[in-house]
Image (cartoon, rainbow, N blue to C red; front, top):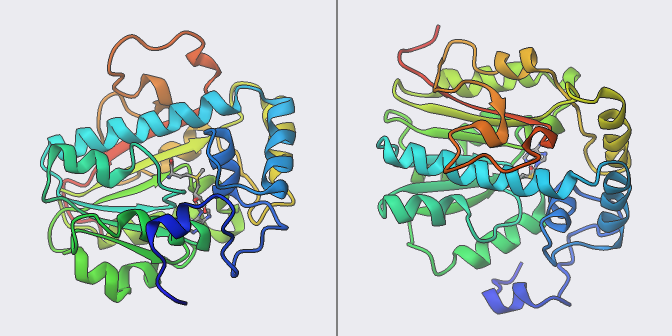
Amino acid sequence: MAELSGSDVLNSDWTPTEIDTSVAHPARMYDYYLGGKDNYAADREAAEKVLAILPEGRAMALANRAFLGRAVRYLAGVGIRQFLDIGTGIPGPGSTSETAHTVAPDARIVYVDNDPIVLTHARALLAGDRPGLTTVVQADLRSPGDILDHPEVRRVLDFDEPVAVLLVAVLHFIKTDEDPAGIVERLKQHLAPGSYLVVSHGTGDFDPDRSEAAVRGYDKATAPFVLRDHKEVAGFFDGLDLVEPGVVQLPWWRPDGEVPEDSDRIWLYAGVGHKSQATS
Ligand SMILES: C[S@@+](CC[C@H](N)C(=O)[O-])C[C@H]1O[C@@H](n2cnc3c(N)ncnc32)[C@H](O)[C@@H]1O
């Protein structure tokens, strides 16, 4: 594929040829919730089905992006200089690299997503970014070995040093028979002591019926949405030390100020775990 300039990619009526716009995709549905323009009719239709049942969906997406920012700022603040952001989403303001570089201009970031539209946008947006410090890789979380062994990942990240692995709003797109716990375990084992794992994840704990009905909106998308309970989400951190306050609803994870009103309607859990020693 020919190299594209940022303005080519950001032009709203430009459509990359390899992207199937007839099937809804979680990245573009998420973009729609966030008020972005990088979505197509199938994405909007599926997202509207979710929002018809769960109007809080937009607030949940915004709360999730805000959590991502707080987590990255926290990690950069405790000295993390390497980030592996899997399930990046279409980059926008408050991206991992933008946030990390405000604290640590030397931070290295690898973005990984399985959606080509994310890759194309991310490449264009990062083209002017600090060369060598940020990169974008098309790969699938369901094949963690391919991510860890990818030459571009290995070029930018040194796994002998601490790395923060970000799995923010992506594990709920991994079906149970695809072994999400095993995938996370594989990633954790690869990390040096001092590394961190960040997870946010949708849950049906607060209103099972409405949550289950809403996520049916993803059934025709490229990946279904799997709700998990608190125990299952906390289980992703097995073998790690949870950073305070543990696995909590997103807005309660180290809020910058007052927790916004209506935060109890944000039905995603979030947590950050620290690997203090090698896991077996
Ligand atoms: C809801 S968005 C989250 C974006 C970003 N992490 C955030 O929290 O703002 C989920 C992203 O995960 C990506 N994704 C879904 N399944 C994936 C998989 N199996 N491998 C890699 N990326 C995946 C989607 O393409 C989408 O960009």
